[in-house]
Amino acid sequence: MFLAAVFSVAVIASLLGGAVVRRLAPTIGAVVPPRPDRWHNTPTPTMGGVAIAAGTLIAFGAIATRPDLVGAPGAWLPVLLAASVMFVVGVLDDRLQLSPLAKLVASLAIGAFLVFALAGAEPEDALPSVYTLVATVWFAGICHAMNLLDNMDGLAAGIGLIAAVFLMALLPGFLGPTLEVLLTALAGSLLGFLYWNRNRARLFMGDCGSLFIGAMLGAASLVPVYNAPSMAFINPAVIVVLILIVPLFDTGFVLVLRRLAGLKATKGGTDHVSHRLVSLGFSERSAVRILYLLGLAGGGTAWFLLRGQGVEPMLPLVAAFGVFVVLLGIYLARVPAYDAEDFIALQKSSFAPFLKDLAFRWHAAEVMLDFILIAVCYYLAYRLRFDGEGFDLFLPYFTASLPVVLGCKLAALYGSGLYQRSWETFGLRDLTAVLRGVGMGSLLSVLTAAYLYRFEGFSRVVFLLDALLLGVAIVATRASFRAMSLVAAVRNKRSRRVLVYGAGQFGQTLVREMRANARWNMNPIAFIDDDPGKVRRWIMGVQVRGTLDDLESTIRRYAVDEVVLSSPSITGHVERRIREVCVRLERPVRRLRMDILDLDA
Image 1 (cartoon, rainbow, N blue to C red):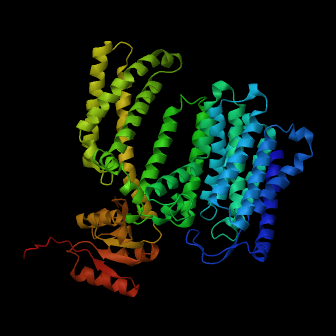
Image 2 (cartoon, helix red, strand yellow):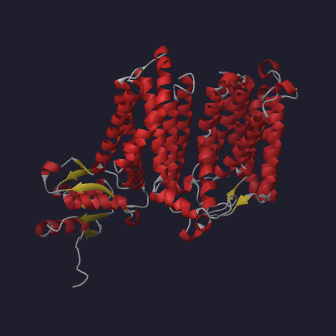
Image 3 (cartoon, rainbow, N blue to C red):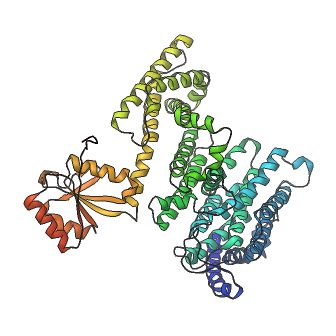
């Protein structure tokens, strides 16, 4: 009830503060003109971070006068001071346009003093110097990551809200009750601000808001690491990374691709993860919701990690989430954001030929991904086969045999021809290569274990489970690009909604090409076919909605933009009726024409 009261006060204070800032901002010139990277057509008031900071401080200040509730100013005071000073830096940036270098220096200096305050002045309390350097850079990095993430309506505020809730909920014992209250106040303040910042935003947070949120989260996330026992040090570190996966992923993604494109990392642009999702055809709201889901997935993975009581038992889950994030990054990197000639750094660098050979001829990324999958699946097979003391007993056999298994399975996958197949066209015919590679790799692993160890200490069930898990993992990763493309094509808001008449081979070919060819901007949403036996069946992921008699009702019900005749056999009376319906409903009709021309004729 107490935390609920703090949360409610923060929501109300931020909501009212946003209304005040929205009215006063234009009077002091705090207005953002229309910009391509914010995709707004009208000037929008900014510096909404004042409302966020005010809501947080008001809600927290309501209990600051209660020593029995606040306790000693241990970790919470440095966190609050660091966030407040970064807020001031953000205000100066909003009003005076500080250089990126000035903001970087400020964040590192504030981070250094924060680390000093958290560690304490006593030499015996200090952490190793490498931890001090990493913690300082971490604080500055999270500040700027949230600053970069503030590129679409409701994105930074929503991700900050999700991260604050997960930090508060998953690490209360490491944070302490007072810092838990402070994060509750921040979460409530962000929720209240989202009323003004959701699409279409009527108020931007400005740098004062994004830097305040980043400083609060960055500083608070360091406290569990400092408070954790030495043996549990890795747990809070992994958990905070998972909780803050969205700002970390977006920042790393943008910095790497801008570097390859020969662009300045500090220069704004529409090349963030959110922008590329919109380029795929998602609406701005959908893009923000996808990143919300990614943040929730990261927090959920952290929750499962804690529930599993350690990193080692839940390593496969963390690895699976990491592989998903990497695959998402690889897929989104393919979405055009720069002109081809912009990749100056990659084209002119001394290592460009090496990268081209490694990445495109030898498919190094696929090999490294499979390297990780083989190790994780082999480990998970042992975990599933043995429990408790049994796992500890057989773990040395896993460790000893892992190099051999890696070598055998990588060689078998290469020999199967898997690395010569494209992810974009991965289908049923490619399954034979997967089955051949996984089966041969498992057979070689069993034979090698039998030769080296006489199969003592090994279980046939482990190798069977390993083969099944690895096969599923490889198929899932290879099919992921087609699945992402399918989701993007179906959710593309700019695509025309197409009804395909004829669900035969021509119709299936047409649907496949619509989804593969983004330049067409066509989304097949229904089949109509003359065969009543096909009605209500799903073909190529598109349902046959009826026969010719259902054409008009289907067009009306599913808001069809145009009709495409897929087969040359659709002529005569049937074609006339189709055209009559489409003329009456003012829908265009087109026909698929497939022909192979003789260029010498």
